[in-house]
Image (tube, rainbow, N blue to C red; front, side, top):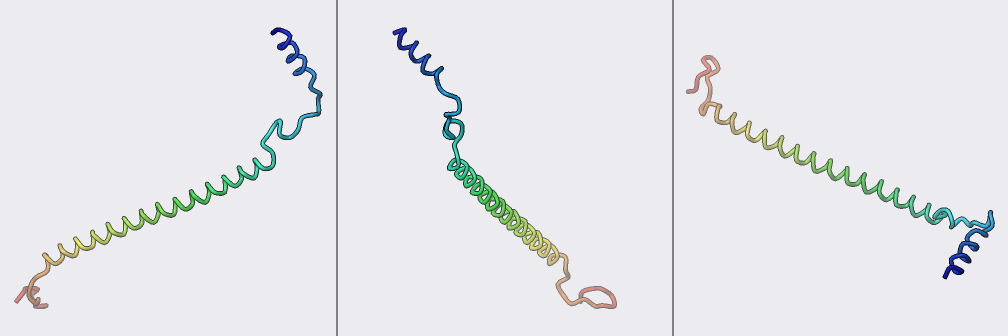
Length: 93
């Protein structure tokens, strides 16, 4: 059993310098292309999400403004006189 460990130790120590390939220390060109594609896809997804959130926010603001105008219009109707107003006296007839 000890001879197996000794032979493995000798084999691992006798590797020559300069025989490493590019796959020994990095993902290579294919890994770079894949990573770059993922970055581009995430950027487009984030831009689309921001655009959709902005659209929803503007829609809700517009609906709130419209509802506010409707309630102000109803209040204005309640405050207006019902008959024609005499311009000289500002009273209803």
